[in-house]
Image 1: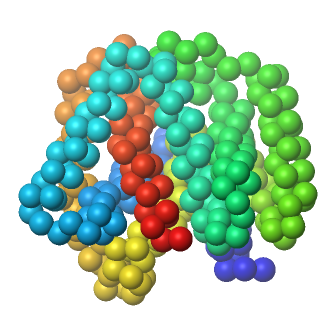
Image 2: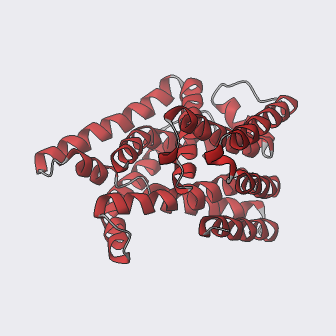
Length: 294
């Protein structure tokens, strides 16, 4: 059993226990803390990544990248304000690919298979994650969807989609020689995810995946790309360099919450709008980073 599989099992078991011990309010508080700390930090050094693969280390170049990146984020917010339903669906689709990409990069498999196989692995993994978390939190998910003017999901249809996706994913993993050895690990992963999300809140279940199975793994790869290794002193440099952008993001989130009327007092639409706006440019940066690492 590999280290990454052992890590996943431990995180799931601890998280499941926490979900039984904590009330929904405390689960949400813990989830928000994780998302708004590690979750934001993992995307706060995109400019360093851009600087590394662009090989332009000038003040003018850095300022240009910052302004371009900030403009992209602002366009994301405008996109949500003008077309909330389309923007949320776009966020989910982009996240499906992004989460799947990070998962399979952690499995050290992406370089061994052709782009088409890799693409479908990413899509199957990311889609299963969202379907599972949606189906086990259907009421709160539909509340969020309604706030974005999207038709609520139907539980029975979601179950059919879940069974179909799971079957196709297992078939895909078993069919290809390169992925066959990962079949048991993937079944175990999604079984434990299902157990977690069936008892936890939407925010807590999402946060556990987003932080421990995405953000931390992404940070590890980013540190290696920026500084050429994952030594503790470089992780410290990474965190310190992320602080100004992290603080700026939190201030922007607070202002967005205070000044924007989304027709609801619920914090969830605010959080997902904010995450989506900063996710769109981040996904492009990470995709380019992995392309340069290969």
